[in-house]
Image 1 (cartoon, helix red, strand yellow):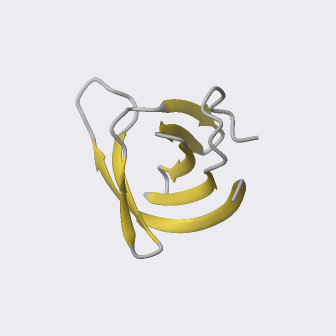
Image 2 (cartoon, rainbow, N blue to C red):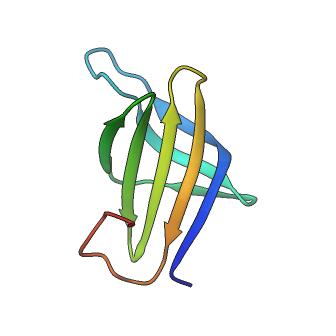
Length: 89
């Protein structure tokens, strides 16, 4: 598998800390399994959402958070083994 575009709502475990302007995403539940993120990943602000990009081993994830609705979406999974670029594009 290379890049799989998902765009599905997922359950998330996130930590909201005082002084940090975005939640720290710890894990998501997708397709019947829990995916834990050991790193904080990269967070980008877009209009109306936050986009999180993670590299866990040789798999990369893109997760979108919509603060106005308090909803999380798994946008894409890339398990092609390329870990030098987190762009997923």
